[in-house]
Length: 354
Image (cartoon, rainbow, N blue to C red; front, side, top):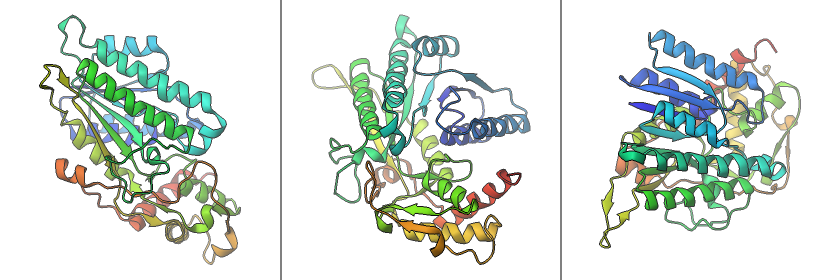
């Protein structure tokens, strides 16, 4: 089984590759990443080193990495031609609501043009009666729910009111994926991720940014005066969900008109339990003290500022995960304190020299 993972040096991509190498036999994994993303490249190098170490520990030569950009159509065509993947997991993207406001062109290029190139390559993988791609799994986001006020968020809800460019690009991806699935009979599954956190995560994510600021003696800003709620989902639970989905492609079938019914599915992957941001920050602060990142007696009250909601944000995210539970038996099991303890201990080790 040949598996292509784009965004393999990213937060989710790297953890997925490590899990695949450790848990699956008779596979070949090709990782593709352009080694950018708006934050320190050393973190991506660190993730790749962890993958290499996992492959070495297992005595496997089933892992290969290629630096390249999915926004370059020639690169994508060459990868598909040379590697001929059976499963494609597209995690490569420009992520984050706030950066999309300032850098819209990067988001259009990576998230729309890049994903279009992946879809085109999947389409042409069937040329000349080749077996082609058996399953395309791609990352969407809870951000697509935008101004939706129905709680919890269901994949049956309307998502045509995005409040950020990032959300708009992810909604566009969902529409493109559905159209390609229908037109070219490509088995496709989209996954709407809900606020993924954990060790070696993205530094622009709130929990990581809060930690950086607190460790540097700076104040943190809590938006919406601390009244936001987020469906925080630990990285190990996310990876488990992706692997369950990868192994179960939607079935191809014909409709009454004789044309293909789109072999397409869309799921939420979240914890299914939104946490108040103030509770989350309180636990994070406690665990940073226990891990030795912050000194004993450090005051959270003196280190934070409550501010209004910022553009592009929403007050609450809350995943309806019943479909994932029904179809795959998926149930996240990592509580906030356990997840933040693992992050704090990792942060202490990773940043010990600085």
